[in-house]
Length: 178
Image 1 (cartoon, one colour):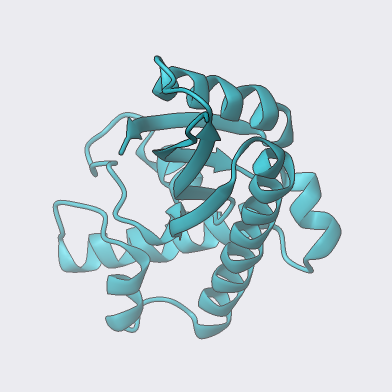
Image 2: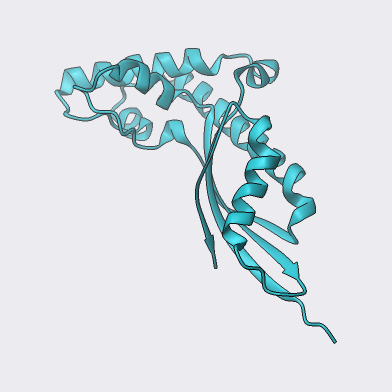
């Protein structure tokens, strides 16, 4: 009698949802919202003489972001995350016995790595604060009759092959066999 082996893989990826897809479903442009967020964050950084660019939540708690703008960013971010989750489920469900989302975070609400004296800081911040990029932590399990060697690389290639054309940008940050 053959025995089934369950293998689990933890995959972290960052994807960017195409602008035309978001614009089809939402009343506000993600890039316009990103530019407005950047302007308001930069105004706070200049006013308070900060040596870094903070996350949106910090700026919001300081009262430096317009409430309607914050709501638009959150709506776009929620919708982008929803689209990404659905696409991952749809495209990869046939290959894995389970797909579990451990974390789904819109990158616009994370701390930017851009520094105030950096070249092209404004453009890099607009890219960061535009709520169209999502970071996912996914745990997938595979049932096989034998142990698979190279499972991490197999999963990475499978994600890349099946999702690369679904998003404007796609990056597998990490794959770890658990």
